[in-house]
Length: 230
Image 1 (cartoon, rainbow, N blue to C red):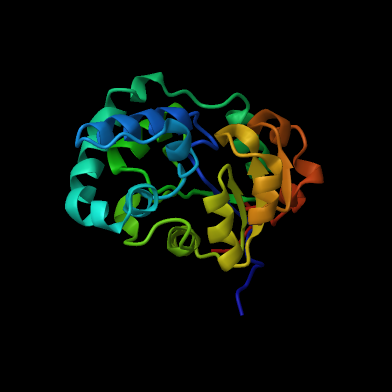
Image 2: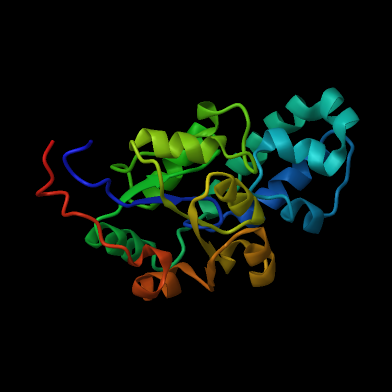
């Protein structure tokens, strides 16, 4: 048995949850599809943001299109998103959220299927270079598969966690692992949708969550890491 109790763990989605990217992602996908002659409604693309690119392309355009153009569209998307990434900003209250989680003894891991170079930008924006994180290179099967969240847990040696996300795909994944869940409306999905997908509680914004951690699944207080035995 371990000498100390397992520290509570917070698995935080990044895109659309900590940084305001969902609409840039939708526009980038729109332009990438247009580049190979396929025009898809931006609203339809937005409904699939939160999926990894491996799943998004066949989900919105079909398996035949995936076989013919999937890799080309994903490569084009990277360039289109690169052109928009300077517009990305963290949501208000992220620093308070991360500080509040630390004060309550949580170990925090960022769970994203973003490209490593994009994740590096986000980590700098969040001043979170010290936090463990995932990228698209960590898994072959992305959300709504649970693989990415499992990798996040493995990176910090956790067996359970509370997951924070903004899309239905986050909660489809978290539910498969039996994780606690908190939703945000920051990604453009409705409260009822997030609850139906598995969010236990939904807050309007990062700032609202940060101000109400003690009435959320993040209210748990873990052991003081400064006194834990190695």
